[in-house]
Length: 116
Image 1 (cartoon, rainbow, N blue to C red):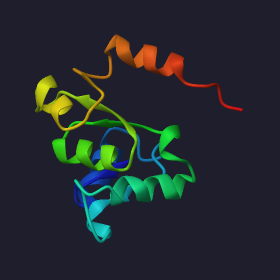
Image 2 (image 1 turned 30 degrees about the horizontal axis):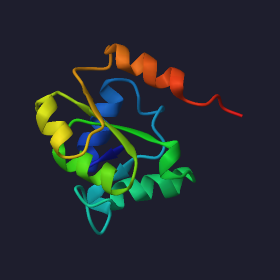
Image 3 (image 1 turned 90 degrees about the horizontal axis):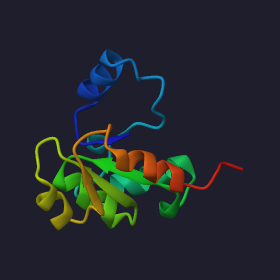
């Protein structure tokens, strides 16, 4: 998870929805030299995960986050929580979805290579 939210907010939300054990690493932009829209937060996550940008997919609901992920050369899907599809596409998202029930998610996951 890569977020511009303060650390306390990020951990509170993850704990509240029961996912604090599911996200590793958690990259907090305030703990870096530069936050989103700079690519550094997503580049940091890639480094911590020891993967290349071509091995990642980002789901982002902010224009700054999309710019950050695209700047890190990661395929990015915009999530239309507060921005329109046009807004998300205009800043670099390859696709925009309304939420995680969108049929595109299934198609996207099916297209990924199987883990070795």
